[in-house]
Length: 407
Ligand code: ASP
Ligand code: MG
Image 1 (cartoon, rainbow, N blue to C red):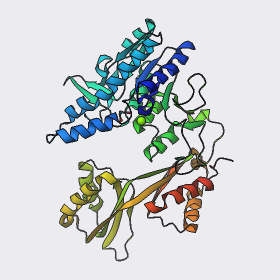
Image 2 (image 1 turned 180 degrees about the horizontal axis):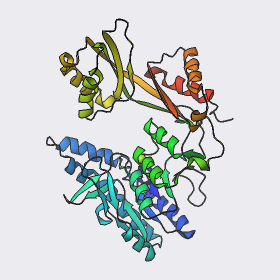
Image 3 (image 1 turned 45 degrees about the vertical axis):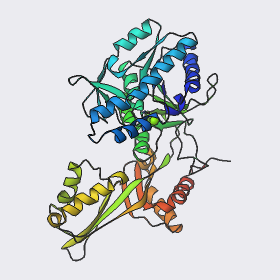
Image 4 (image 1 turned 60 degrees about the vertical axis):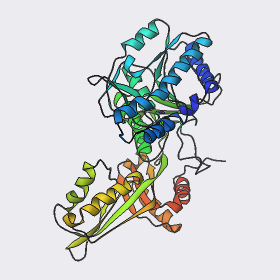
């Protein structure tokens, strides 16, 4: 069982979590619980790091931001004991949950599940601090990147051979799209790993992308549900599982969107071998993730235009890197836009149906929405449009593919 920040926002909420745990214990289950920091705590810690450190140091950053989860794991263990259950808290290094030394976004290398299994033998609930790990040879605490408790939970579930990994959050499952944008959004009963991976990568915020990757590789069944349900009688959530287990397939399962995008366009770039490498090589070296790339076919065959997207937070840096290489790359003009949004439709049904994206292009055109860039893959397509049209575009696609809840 994993509980996110809003589920452990204060001691009262932690008592509520304990009731959810108790229900599962009473049902005869052996439980490991993974907790996040209290809502807002990690942001506060990150802000303190920035305030304190002109000598920014990622290892110290991890030492600081990992502290939020230490508090909640201890508190939950206390509260569980208070209601008559046996429990103890576990920090990342005590398990140990071993990672590489990429501080701030470390990858899990190995988890020794034997300590937790001993815990179960003693009839104890293991309460694990999420988000954190341990780099053995440097003897330092690491963290798994923002939202990393999801990944802690899934990896731990795989390590101990859990039957299921229940992710408790403040919504009652995975929705066809963000219900704040589309009131007619529906909760999905089941989503395949692959679709969930795309949804999470393309902007749905329920789960950290890496956690879905780990679940897919190790075939850990994920169940996303709400801690705000009555602990004695929780509602259904969303099961994330193998595609084969889903009988009723829709062509499109969900619409995701991400406002965290910026577009950069280079004009009159020399149309010759090596240009793309000259542009994207330096960006890659600077660890800037480039997403959609469009190269225009030129009329005069000597120059071309290239446009692509980067995360909004990397926009300034990417512009700087390219400006500095204007001579070397050889382009006439550089321009950019930050008020853009990427809208994506996801569904495994796209593999076997043609014309799915074409319908979207038509529907958006009818609403007068211009599409700046398009990318497609086997089970999704994405379109970059002006941010001002986000709501309109998402609602249009949601209805177009029959996802609206019946009222
Ligand atoms: N507390 C961490 C964060 O806010 C990890 C998590 O909640 O998953 O990013
Ligand atoms: Mg989260």
